[in-house]
Length: 233
Image 1 (cartoon, helix red, strand yellow):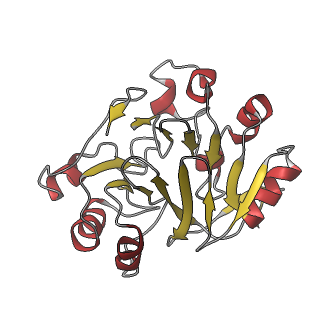
Image 2: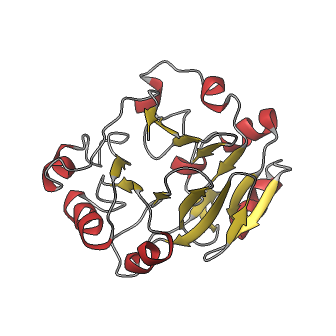
């Protein structure tokens, strides 16, 4: 398994046969754009695209990518329906608690404490629940992408059900957990072998580096990857 970060909350997970892109906010993502990687390169060869929720800094390039690749879009019902209205023809509806089974992995949608919407004509449009995503390969480590969330006690149930070895954890504060609560979540509810921090450095009003999180974690199990460089798990 290889996991590649493309800035903010966008990750690509490459399994033996499947290649999953999550939350492809690329255009307008300064962290990604500074790496001078073409969007087409990020999406090359993907077999699935999954969204945690409907905020623009997560849906990003979804429509343009899917018009080119035509792979399944996995998203909560309301968000998937909205994307169909934007021209996406490959929506796979799911909702909190649901699991979809594919050839060499399953994907489960679990709760997250956040909101989910986009702005239409200056007003918020509700796009269903915000979720975390658990990817369980037939061969490989189980990965939990938390999406955008605060810490919450039912993370213990997520760990009990799925026992993820890899955590993708938002740490930027203001809109998600900050360093203190994110590290507490990892230490209290999970036994991650590897933790990838995300959702930092993209906007001036969130934390610019993962340094505080790394310090709170005492450096244990934290991987801070460079944009576009795969990490072998």
